[in-house]
Length: 127
Image 1 (cartoon, rainbow, N blue to C red):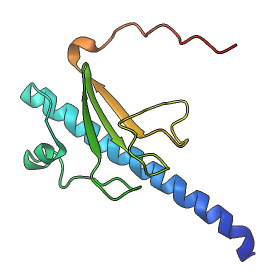
Image 2: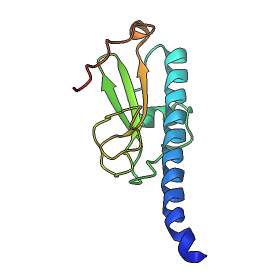
Image 3: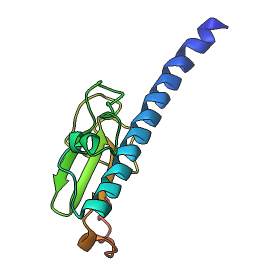
Image 4: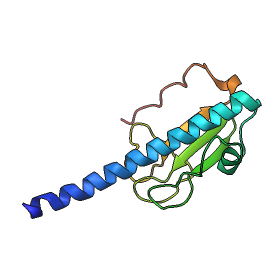
């Protein structure tokens, strides 16, 4: 019976880490949006959210133990953790393949003027 459970244990541990990454990114994302609504600007770091009282402490990435990452984009911010491979891919988020190696796990926040825009045209499919 124990031999049957060992492979499942690893899959359960991976799923647990993925869920922790999603929840921690969600917490930071909500704190950033609350900060923006009250202060009229985005915070520059997670440390600023902690100092302002929106977070008790900087959440850590469950895959590498470092703090979650923020990345400024032209139209908003990314809040992300490294993916299941434990490598920081610079915020490469693919919602269709979130749990595959080569992708990070997280969310994007848009600046107010960039919200409610029509979606980009679909990417051409390979023949």
